[in-house]
Image (cartoon, rainbow, N blue to C red; front, side):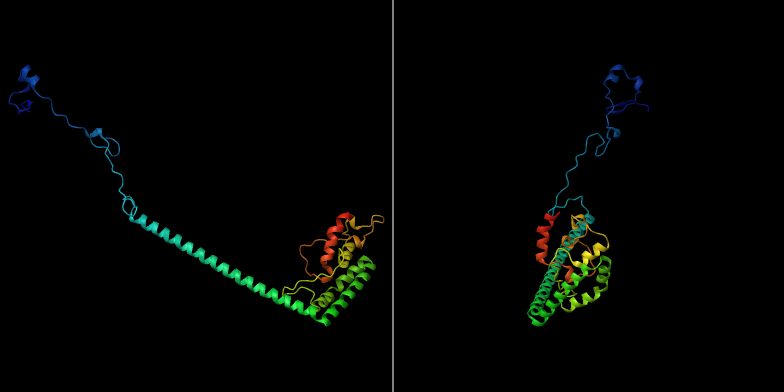
Amino acid sequence: MNGAYTPNGFGSKPFASLNAQDRSSSAPPPAFSSPARGRGRHRRGNGSVAHTPPPMESDDGMSDRETDKDAAMKKELEARRRRQEELRVRMAEYQAKRREEMEGRERQEAEELQRRIAAEEADPVLRRMRADAVEESKRWESRLLAMPANQAWIEVKDTQDERVAQWQELKLMGSTEYRPTRGLCEGMCSASEVVERVATMDVMAPERDPTTGQPDPSRFVKRYKRVEPVIIPTDVRTSAALVVCRLDWPLRR
């Protein structure tokens, strides 16, 4: 370049040939902003921070940042929640209906069973047969307690099926129609259990005679059993016997 830059353009004279006055009056070159000054996110070339407007809210409450996929997912989740709520309500209604039906059926069966029991109690022939069977059972228990323990225990096991059939015929033993077993034992423990526990040497200290140390049938108390395969009426205590056990047994210990 042969000329020096001046406000009026490049002159014909070289810059070195200009005098000191001309050199001092020459204007400096214009300043341009450097792109390197704009660093960071959302910055302009001159280094100032770009102003980002807030997202606009539409009428339905959705911002412009939400995409169509997000909206579709929200709708699907809301529809699923409604279906689950409807299913829960329908299940609750079905369970309540089934519970009401079962309670009504059980109530009808209980009423029918009570009518049968009342009719059996009013039958004089059946009532006399039951009384005779109870008396015979008491005599058999007295003979049982008079036998040696091992022989009496064999007698109990051998006559169990016969006694079960007898009480089932008299309709005093529980059956598949939810008929309750009527207790006939008037003592604190049945004779068959006394014989079994003496034969198996399963006697507690309070159940022995304090003077002789021998098992005393009048001091025995029926032991709790979680599972019992056969429940015979003569092995189940009456309400009066339960009251005696509750009041008398703690005084004997």
